[in-house]
Length: 148
Length: 481
Image 1 (cartoon, helix red, strand yellow):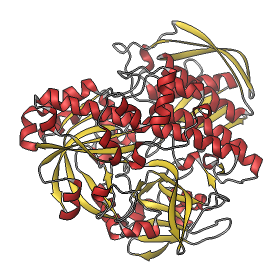
Image 2 (cartoon, rainbow over the protein chains, first blue to last red; image 1 turned 180 degrees about the vertical axis):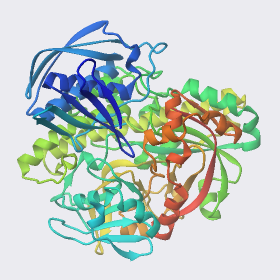
Image 3 (cartoon, chains in turn cyan, brown; image 1 turned 90 degrees about the vertical axis):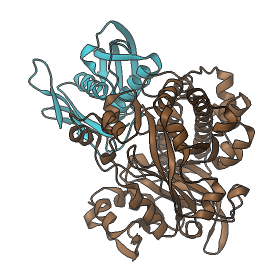
Image 4 (cartoon, rainbow over the protein chains, first blue to last red; image 1 turned 45 degrees about the vertical axis):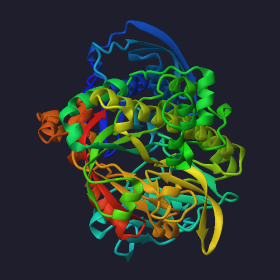
């Protein structure tokens, strides 16, 4: 597994989970907001080299869901969809509301510059396969598999 | 988990999982004993069992020799459902609705193409957009998108991409009925707007190759294939338009399962009765995705033809890049099959499996009818691909279906690690294969060793009597995402 550590937290933010045909992530967070941000960071690390991406532009994102798994699925699907149709990459998120059934956030990132940004692959979809979101005593943990 | 599944070897090439618990029918996996070792270590047998639980499934839940773990249904899965009591499942089709393969054969020989091969591959790479975030050369407005979802490959031909007679050499004539654009979300149309005429990333490709070996002279002659003849293979599907339709449908189908009291061992298996508003809605949307993919491959086929003409400086009539056949390998549709001696209509799902209608079938183009439908099985970018023909055994045992490819043997990360430090493009060039890819990572992820040997897969299909080998194609050049 390729682990990534969060800055200053000493806590794992996400890990890449390998699968024969596709790729997944396990994301962590002390709060649900942190979990969503780390899951998004995991997904975008599969799509592109994110080191060069800056939070130059911001846009609002609001989402409702029937439960926390639907929320994680909907959040990542919406970001992937926006990234494709708007040709943008997102690096950070600020949440004004975040519960298992509702998210209100600002997403920060920039327009893809094909000269400067290294794009690896396309995420066809965020799958429901073995999708798991748990609230453990140590914090939140989500497992998500992407169809590439 | 697969170790505990009961697998009984029924023939040299077929294994059965007996019906137990909630299974409506048995599971059947087509594989040799050696292949079964690898298949057992994967979750595919469990997924074959899971599919056998679905309401209205007929005869058996099937898996082809290239089967491996998928979402809900295994890749290589085939299942047919009764239209009155059965279900339709987006997981039985996959995200890339009507992903498929077109084989084209030219009037040129390897010797005529090889001196200008690099130029040809470069021209293809310029003309056919590949990779992520690369917009196609076409931008579709709402009216054009509606025309495409109703017209399929026919739309492309009406707009100057190819010849009318090609339609007869595409599965379903390049267009299915029952497309309902009203069932497709605005998001899907938005994703589809810029992606017409694009290959995409991952394992999608356009390959120039040649006929290296012929196994069946009669069928090869019928398909117009001869040793040394240059070919082109296009492998792609419905792009973001189809992915979004599938994603949207899974949300609807999850609610439908609760509504109709369908209990599932895996959420990705979600489905709805064929004869329900949700089932009809999915069919209406999926049919739009199917037609988008037919149009996409038709547009790319025409650009391929033009690239041959321009790069080689040979006129169109001499290039003579003709569509041999185009198959879909991610699809669900209504077909007529004989079950227990009675012909009936069934909803056949093929997810990473190819239609392989045998000799004499009315849906096989007249030119090929005596030998059966051409089936195109791409391998990896360094070795070979196969042309097969549908066989009678497929009509009896697999709802007229066979395998679709080699299947991965390594994960993407494993492939990248094992090829670290290697110059894949140069390695292939030394073997006379010119490859251009949008991303060097793709090149490493798609190395030959990352895939199983497709020969084992097609030999198993031949052994099982579900298709017959006609020809082997070897690669000359390839463009990838």
